[in-house]
Length: 289
Image (tube, rainbow, N blue to C red):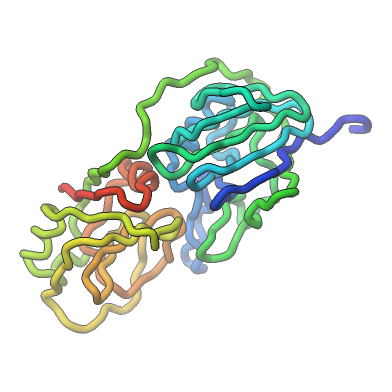
């Protein structure tokens, strides 16, 4: 409509890593395309719920903060997930809260003290073009929107008809020094010794700096195999605890490959994947049945 200004978020700084994410792309695993989507689906959903957006509206997922954006046109936003210090035009602001940014206002996100990933939702969603039905960036497959860089303008979609019905959502802090993850054994736990399975469930692991949206690489007790050789490639899901020949497990996250040839000793319950996604390098990890 003539004379209506398009609203957008102008990226001033992208921090260590910022991606556009929604609930992911479904139904393409047969083509070798994974779901992707927000690594911490619960925090992504909370941002949209605060803003009365549809659950699949796209947000910005930041890793260890550092994001700065400027409102181009008035926008309403909310930041969830890892609680990074927030400032709007230099004044402190609260996480898990509906924030109204006038045209030209700047929102700056610091580094969270705990947790790894924060989510910046905007009322109307980040309205970049979808790829295969999703606005998620899959860093493994190279699908979806480009990583936001300084100077990028991210369009904001039309605001939903229903207004937000709350302005704050009290939540427990995410992240922490230890993540306890519930697992179901298999499908290839028979490729490991009984001692290895006991070790998985009693040992202490630590998230290494070689972790990303594809998976969390863990250091800790080695898991001994009961069989030699390798498997043909088979399907993988988020939460798979795959064990390469070195014996230290890898926990697959949102951008995991759709197939893999190393045996999967266990799978993390989907309800615990948001906690896994918030485990920053140095976090201790324990697995429990």
